[in-house]
Structures are given as structure tokens and as C-alpha cells.
Image (cartoon, rainbow, N blue to C red; front, side):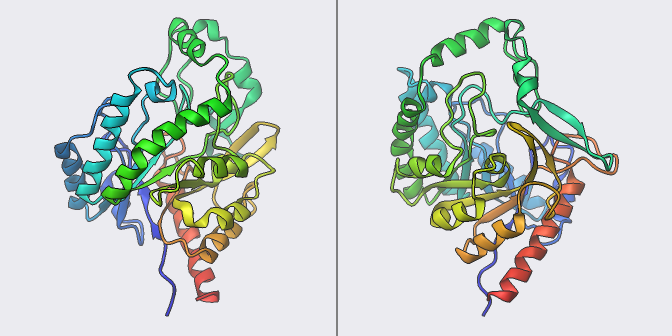
Length: 351
């Protein structure tokens, strides 16, 4: 008898996404969706009505909502501010309600101030397609006295005063101290998630190094081990993102899968091309296109018996498609079919 299959799924940004649920329902073997309630202010508990409404929209398209990406962590928690406990309580309430609704996986991150960061959303490849790109030199050239522009992947533009005030609050915070703040958070919410039947899957820092001097704690094998040691609850685990981790040449991705396999609750598979130290851009998912060997990563996932949700992460914008950079339908669909083929071949060889 063949081993259980991975749940191949797809990211949908919600009603504002140019890619419709009807489009996603036509991608072979995709019967579940990864989405979020981005209209709810960060720090507020999600209401049962909002959760059920999103479920109903997905089900009307023949899809089931199984993964939340993301339930954002309020900045007060990362800052260890006096009011953090009320935001943790609201987060726990959201987890309970998601569990009651049958949504079983929550992806989130613990990156301060910024989410995933890129410096170019229209980096052109030789084939004419466009991808998102990161250049440390370009980031260093930003004049922070004028505030932060709306960079790719981060929709909020701070004024100079807002940004400086935030940086001042993080000034001098070490990675070790920041890890302690994460430990406080996860020890409070992991038991709630476990009781609710929800898996928490922390996403690696993207990119996994300090930007603007802010602490980063989720980007290496040692970092992942330290994160997992913060709670032994089986609900506390990882989103294994090959793109985030793959931009560091020293990260052995298949080895990390084999070490942490039991704690991987969700997988993002994307490919990146390292151009140099802290310089990279994204490419298609196929072997040889970039610096990450997704065939070897998939082999490791099959070896450890991973059967959780996996989605094709960022891809190219091809065939004239426009929309959210990195989140076009066409190349992610091609990537998903490639990953499914690799997965099926591996399972046939190792039933």
C-alpha cells in the first residue's frame, strides 16, 4: 500500500486577490486553500462569523480552508510591552475559534516591524518573466530619514518619525532577548492550540538576517532548534520555507527536514538564485533553475513521512500576467504540477 500523500494546496489572498477561487479549483489535485482574514486589524480576535463566512466562500468553489496564513502577531508582543498579555489572549481566542471551525494549521511569523522583505518586484529574468528580488546594497541605499517606501511584500509605508520611534524601541535588543519574548508568547498559546486541535507553524525570517539592525531568530538550523526548544507542545512546529532558508548557502535544507521532520506542520516550496552575499532573486521551481534543489527537499519530506499541507510558494510572473508580485496563477500552477510529479515518482520508488 502506498504511503499517505502530501496535501497539495494553494495560497489565496482573499476577495481582493486577482486569482479567483474558481481558477484555483481548476488546478489538478488542489482541493484545499490557504487564506487569511486580512481585513481584521492586527491584535483583534477573529470572530466566528468572519471565519465561517470565509469557509463558506471557499466551499462554494469546491475548496476547503485548511491553513491560515497568517494570524499576525501584534507588535506589542514582540516588544514585550505592558499590554502584550491582552493581545496574547486575543490570539488564543482566535486559535480556539479556528479549531472549533475545523481549520487545523496556522502559519505565522515573529519578525519585528517588517514582514518578508524584497527590494525589487520587477526583476527581469533572461526569459522575459519577472520575479521579486533582494539586494542588500539596495536596502542599504534607502534614506530612512525620509521614511520607508512601499517596498515589495510590505504594504505599509512608515513616516520617518514612525519608523524611528519603532527602531528606538528595538534598540539594543539582542537575538537572545528576542527569543525570550517569543518563548513567552509560544508558552502561552501553544497549550491553547493543542487543546483546539490546531498546529502552529512559525515561518522563518525572510530574509534570515538582520535588516535595519532588527533582531532575527528563525533562519538557521541552530535557530530552528532554539525555537522548537521553547515549547515541547506537539502543536508548536515549523513552516519549512525553502525560499527563506535557501538564501543562506550554509543551510542544508534536506538535512534540516530530516532533523525536524516531526515538527514540520506546513511546507512552502520555492526556488531562489543566490547572486552573491545577501543578494538573490526568485526563479521557477524546477531543478537547476536556482540554488535550491527541491527534488532533494521533497525526497527528505517523503523520507520523514510528511503528509501535511504544502503549497508552491512565490513564482515568476509569466505570459503577461499581472497582479500580486510573485503570486501569479500560471507559474505557481506549473510549479505545483512539477512538485506533484516529483512527489509521485518518489513515492513510487519508496512506497
